Image (cartoon, rainbow, N blue to C red; front, side):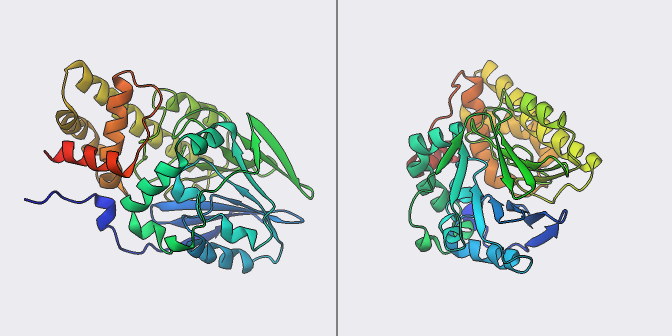
Amino acid sequence: MAEKKFASQADLEVKKTSFIKLSDNAYAYTAEGDPNSGVIIGDDGVMVIDTTATPVMARALIGHIRSVTDLPIKYVVLTHYHAVRVLGASAYFQEGAEQVIASRGTHEMIVERGEQDMKSEIERFPRLFAGVESVPGLTWPTMVFDNEMTIFMGQLEVKLAHVGMGHTKGDTIAYIPAQNICFSGDLVEADAAAYTGDAQLEEWPATLETLRAMNFDKLVPGRGPALLNPAEVNAGIDYTKDFVTTLLQSAKEAVADKLDLKAAMAHVRSKMDPKFAHVFIYEHCLPFDVTRAYDEASGIKHPRIWTAQRDKEMWHALQA
């Protein structure tokens, strides 16, 4: 009997995208559980937060940007290193992009595992990498910051910050202080599973509380709908915190009971399925989520690198 394929390999249904105005300067590009992007329009240029997965797919977002402004796209911000977020960057160079900005932790992850991650993700999720032949290679930051940096786009102040580890060790948020609007990347999800294959699960809840204390009025999560008022922002943070804490706690229970990975998956499902089985990409994420949570509960602090081969080995262990 043939093994089942990854849920993501069988997900071929194109998602409906939305370009939502948050303010005169900010827009959310969302896609029914596919990765979101953000757009900030300043006085003299545009910032794009997360690039989409390929230059071909980026053209759709650029079309939306061009429907509201002719200003050059000056800045590309990477909220983290995952291929699905960064490989579309080259499309923006043709639109005037001068800087690709990332945190120190994100740069370190690209150096350490960018190549393997790119191959793993492309094989894992073909629909999200439509036009993959247009990708010229890894996306490298031209500007790296440690904790925080400020960019003035004319009179408009934009801040980039690494407020803590969570989805990855280098997670970056972008926000407009004067308008209390935040783009969180995959630190926060809404109505979608959190992919935690490269996460720092122990630290993630505290990072979310740091984010909550910043009291944003609007927040664009990594996946799912834009959160358009403080109650929705808090609900998104609560949801994400519940997801990652339930995942890690149930993995710790499995490790304490000396369960193997397949039995650990069954135990985690017993806790997670009732709350989360209905959300976007849950089945796509769960094998990777459980594997990382099992590793972290076993004392593996720094996430192991995913390769196409490791993907297959993990999948085989869960199907055996």
